[in-house]
Image 1 (cartoon, helix red, strand yellow):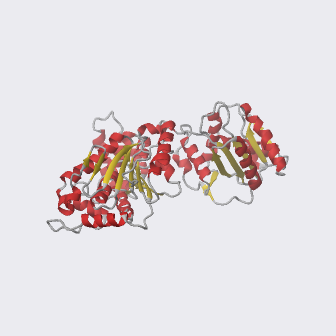
Image 2: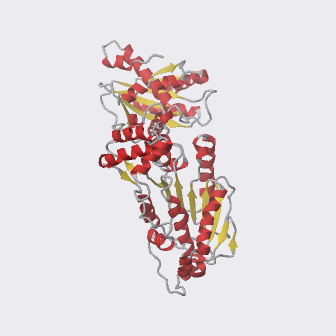
Image 3: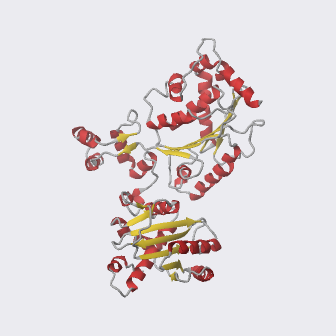
Amino acid sequence: MAQQLFSELRQECMGQSPQGDAHPAADLLAWGREFLPAHFHRPPSRLQGWLAAELDTWAPSGDSQRLGQKLNIIGPRGAAKSTLGSLAFPLRAAVEAREAYIWITSDTRHQAVMHLENLKLELSENQRLHRTYGTAAGRGPVWRADAIRLPNGVAIEAYGTGQRIRGYRRRAERPTLVICDDLQNDQHMVSATQRAASRRWFHGTLLKAGTKRTHVLHLATALHREALAIELTTTPGWHSRRFQAIERWPRNMLLWEEWESIYADLERADCRQQALEFYQRHRAAMDEGAELLWPEEEDLYTLMCLRAEGGRAAFEREKQSSPIQPDLCEWPESYFDGALWFADWPADLQVRVLALDPSQGRDDRRGDYSAFALVGIDRAGVLYVEADLARRPAPQMVADGADLCARFQPDAFGVEANQFQELLAGDFLAEFQRRNLLAHAVWTIDNRVNKRVRIRRLGPYLAARRVRFKADSPSTRLLVDQLRDFPIADHDDGPDALEMALRLAGELLGSRTAPDPLGNRLRLSD
């Protein structure tokens, strides 16, 4: 009955106005151009076109068959994500009564209130809306800074990350549409505690406030590799899409490097003019191959100037949706390009090893992973790697390790022996005996060299493109992310386990009596 009444109310809101304009544009982008021309005067970006098409498919809350959609968009700053997702979309949903109860959430309550203020401004002053939607677009009976209710009954409220919202509802209604606009801020780049707190609030409080019929739109710029937006790309039930300001780089980056040396030469008073003239002389070659997200708003030269001025780390984070800090990372991003992944383990592996970094010592940080690294080496000296990273107690660690040994059949299994962790070796040995896995030798590995120094030993293998990673393993992809961000990553358990596995493999190959050309290439001293 309530759905029928709401459907009738929506039809009434769409009824003919005194001026007779009763047929607004059917799709969201056209609607934005019609009612918000100041915001939609340029051709849409690829992000806007794709997002609008997705939102156009979302069923209204009055549809009895509706199931809630969860959409996660990662895009550059300045790509007009908010214009479409936090202004045009909820504004249309409100005046057409497509949604009964809308929440706008953001990093802080103040920021969420500002998004709501933009909606209030259009609702109270936009004459195009008034002519088409009549009183549905006007000031309603509730008109506060953080909450409004329109004459058609639609309610919109604003909340900040971490704000207490458990149990909030409007009469019997839970929110039918939740819009999340940049729930994390710049502080989350440096604070794992703040990232964890915002994740707990998002999953444990905000998402629990809706129902299975609630639509959720998450808009973000990825500030950190462990940002909420990045996490959602691998979270079941979410549909994610990542956009970059430069979708394809120019083919001739050497010319751009030469240009940047001119642009950044501050000893020249006219360095910017000289750089522009250099670009104009070589424009065809410097533009060739480039593809941009929104060339009408940010052309290639503008973007490359931003990259030179703000630094590559900031540009990757803010414009390329790639939250890395290459200037602080041990290895260049190029080490992780190309033929990095493998699908199936090769049949001709010369040695197989499994190593564990338990991360159970007194100096380890809360929330560290226990990391297993499976490494196989073929005759050509190529290393094949799979990882299993998880937060688990010691009994689960032992059970998982035995399972991995049964599957992988390593020649040796190594466990870090530092501090009380040497006790784990006995637990593993007992489990192996119980499951008839005694063929697997258990080694204790005593790490006396500083962890960062040990992990840096992986560099020559990465530089030589001799490492392949298991493509269908989320834990292995997490290991690659930890390698990319080393030494500034929040966690380095995966690289630590990988280094131990390679050291163990070197010991095995070096101890064999038969000549083995891999030994000299793999030996790692501690």
